[in-house]
Length: 294
Image (cartoon, rainbow, N blue to C red; front, top):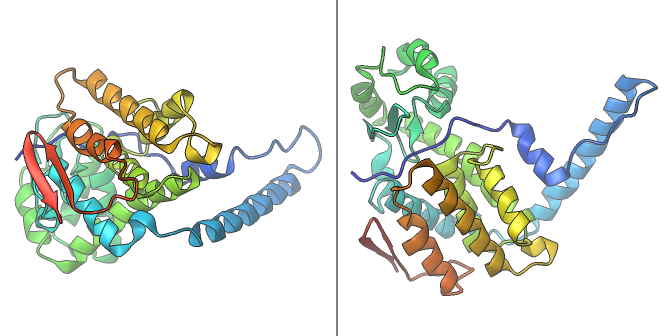
């Protein structure tokens, strides 16, 4: 099964998104009651957050609409698992030789990049007697490495657990909480239509929500140096082209021979066609394989 790799280790804290949406916290100053200043700053941030939430709530659903979200999962699955049937991948697990240990599940949770550990920890809090709980010590030990030590029987256990609706739901929630919803939210704040929201989501899945130059927020920052977002008054297509350019450069910097068709013969195709609403029918290729969604 052809794969393009998975998430980088740098997983941004929840506060990262707030920084990008709200800007840095105001300086409390050098004198006075720091506690009071902090409380006032927190209250201001809370109020601004509520205003942003209300603003976003009134925006068109875009990629968050049920049919578009389903489409997004299918396009991502074409690049991550060479299939449009993304639901068939809950039980997927293998080491694809990319240095991230085991890659598994619907968006490629990896034993070496923290998100597999995060998933199993969350799942175990709700279902303590699950079949993956016993691997938590080993997952903590190998986090950040490609080691399989203590995980030799993990593939069989993962596949068995994927037969349970609760574990499939746990994968869905982590995908939504850490990748899909932050990506769509940020794209809306940048004034992007459904295609741009998908580009952000795909980048979040592949590169991880990190703030360094290889992570999603670092890529976004570099793209904004090259072109203005629509929210800044820029041309949306020009900005999205810059965003894809940066993504491609990051992928090639990690591995000069890396396949970038998820950008070159998929997302660029949609952009060149001016399909900012990501309307179907869609045709694209990944790794040379053709796909179509009517």
